[in-house]
Length: 235
Ligand code: CA
Image (cartoon, rainbow, N blue to C red; front, top):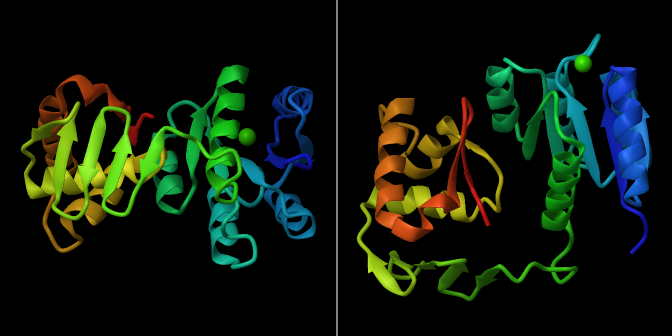
């Protein structure tokens, strides 16, 4: 496989050079841009495999860059990892809803950054390329770790024992389990699991999730709370 290319859009020179060094040492081809405008030009020119996008940029904001990427059919599918400063959770939520794949808060640990980058790249590689063995899909069943979902009959099993879920809990579990580790915000879960027209608060989602988790028993830790943002399914 040829080198995978990562574009960093970040205006802080120190962070830019640290991240660049670390990713290059891991065998990635790294491009950098200090503004969103330059970043967008590089994307069309070089088609990176992944974009690391700082939200707080001079000029065009990170969220605007994200919007433009997702609106351009030629580049819309490129995985995007957004990077936010502490206390910008509301921007992170907007970013995820605009289609970012994952996020990191500053200051971040370099090993975690590399792990997130690798996880996103693994997900976006074409079928058959280093496919993970953890998630096994047949036509009717989805098996992840201890959890098996019978999609034909809407049944869920943990360690081969059936778990009785409500329809909403089933849809929440299904949305999370098929999101391949990406963080889903509460709004996204409401849309997917409950429906736009229902009057639901964030708190309602939390109540359903708490109940779902307790029913999952030993598999409960597979649903992770991402503070201030939403939930993620851990593989
Ligand atoms: Ca910044």
